Length: 236
Image (tube, rainbow, N blue to C red):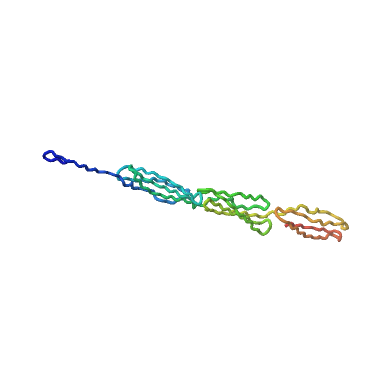
């Protein structure tokens, strides 16, 4: 309003419009990272500031599955909004992976007689992030005889992501047990003119076939009609 010396006046109006069209700026956004599925996965908050007022930061997380349970991606979208509705967005990507093989525990190696019990215990395994499947491949390697052989059992533990661990159990089967005679002809004394039966012996073995060898020895006596026959049986 302007007034002259005689009191005449005129008025004009100025209007100043103050607006906030500036979006907030992020002062901190958590960095992208890659981590093992069994590790800690920190979920830090983002922060933002505004030129003229307070800011509210919200986060929306989306999980995208991968090829297996232990592989996936977490996408975290942060949105900073000021009091006038101006907003800014920033994204953090967290990549979760499973590269850790299962931990496999297998039965111990052992050596056993061929006629003993041969336990075929199962293996066990644990994984850091998922289920484990255990496969076993058995192979029998012949030895020098029927009662000697070796069994190898290769266990392979595989998790959902294809990580695997293998270990082998070796079972050594031996035959150190001698055959057992089941029938040996009894000693007898006979007249020189009588029949002299030469019966065979028999034997069994714990793990295989038996061969019986016979060695006969005649020991002369005091006259032609007196003598002794010894028959040595060997079962092998």
